[in-house]
Length: 117
Image (cartoon, rainbow, N blue to C red; front, side, top):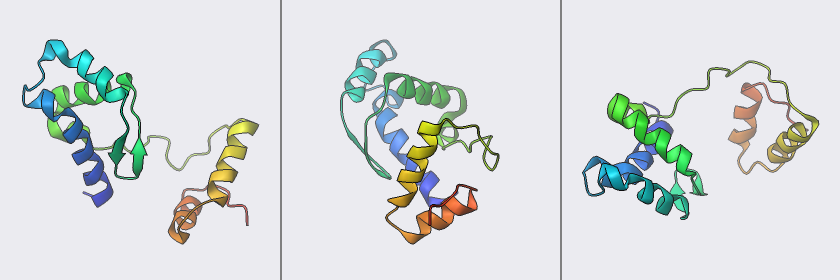
């Protein structure tokens, strides 16, 4: 498994561990999810906030598939052109032009995104 995927899987497990170990009961999970959603978390790519819906999905995947279900899923539309609005197209151009590492640009180019050079 790619180390980035492993890092995300570990991050998700760390958030769900009180539920997995029965520290938080199944009945109290919604309160726990709401508490987590109000906090910032240190994820593999920096600080993030999570929605209650995302936490519910991750927990459902854990219950259905076990720890393997917490691996990041590969996008099923990866490599295919996507219809974008003018606004989101501009957002992509802005985020690409502010990439911090040269590898980011290479990765984006390999994914077929236009790079504004």
